[in-house]
Length: 282
Ligand SMILES: Nc1ncnc2c1ncn2[C@@H]1O[C@H](COP(=O)(O)OP(=O)(O)OP(=O)(O)O)[C@@H](O)[C@H]1O
Image (cartoon, rainbow, N blue to C red):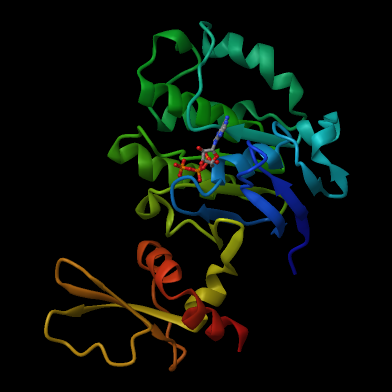
């Protein structure tokens, strides 16, 4: 049974008083899972990540990490949290210098993980961070983030800017670094890059949580399949036209396992939230 790493309790937050982004928002984030955080543009995914790591402060409510209020930004939580933002600048130094300056903040920093990850991405410790392409910068930053070995790793659109081979290297690096003590939250629109990686899916829409379920429960309750143009779609909970015909979500009546199709699930939860939610409540 997973324990809760992050507890968001009655969160209220908005950049402007008149337009609250989160209001009475509650969410428990379990330990030991790779979690996909999905939502339409502007729903507040990045904001939620910044609130979770204490870079933004709630107007109401609390966010705690194993009981400690993250907005206090105590060493206890800061040394166990690492954020990879969507956009960032790296200092004009070598990777070696960057590690020398920053690794000390993270008690379980692993030089082995860093070296292995850099090698997988065709980089090394001698690279100069100021002289890298955007995609290479992202890879170098992801390698450092994984090497921090923090209990919580937050990633905002981590695969943006990565080339095709690097996307699978990224999945491999995340999966191989996972332990029961680590939690990774990935906010992304690049659902195809991560759907085989996830243990848990959270979909937010405004202040509502449309879905907050382990992938195991999702695939126990829902059956994802592809149908040809003229094949029947009777009983489908959701139908999305695809190149070959239709992508379907059906109730998983026969208990058969099917691979999660995150794109179709996301669209289904936006269009047919209540219909699908009732299946999870049974
Ligand atoms: N610094 C800021 N000042 C004022 N408003 C902001 C600021 N940052 C974000 N917002 C607004 O808050 C809302 C949520 O933004 P946020 O970046 O958290 O959404 P998101 O779900 O991550 O979006 P996307 O999928 O487009 O990256 C948006 O309407 C955005 O315009």
